[in-house]
Amino acid sequence: MAAARSELMQFKVTPEERRVIENRADKEGVSVSDYVRGCVLMEMILDGDFEALKIVAREVGRKTLMGMRKKADRLASLAEETEEISGRKGVKER
Image 1: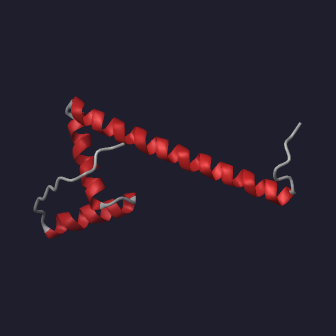
Image 2: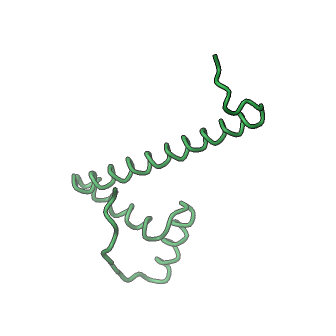
Image 3: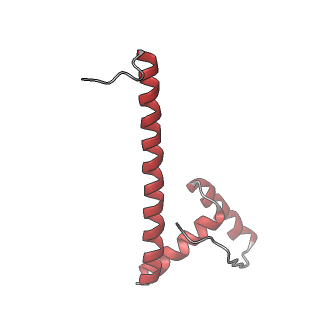
């Protein structure tokens, strides 16, 4: 499980910078925190920071696993619905 984010970082921006960052985060469908964190980590990776790469790889792996679990749950649900519709619930195929 990923470590809980408990540390707070703050920085000042101009009103224009805030607007641009918030608009981009919204366009990407993520929070401002996630957007800024991703930008900073990506810049660090591009500069060759291996620790930043490990953080991103861990997060990508976790999100991929969560996505796969959601799809598996959805497939199981669809299978149950199909069995109920066809009246075959509890009947095993031979």
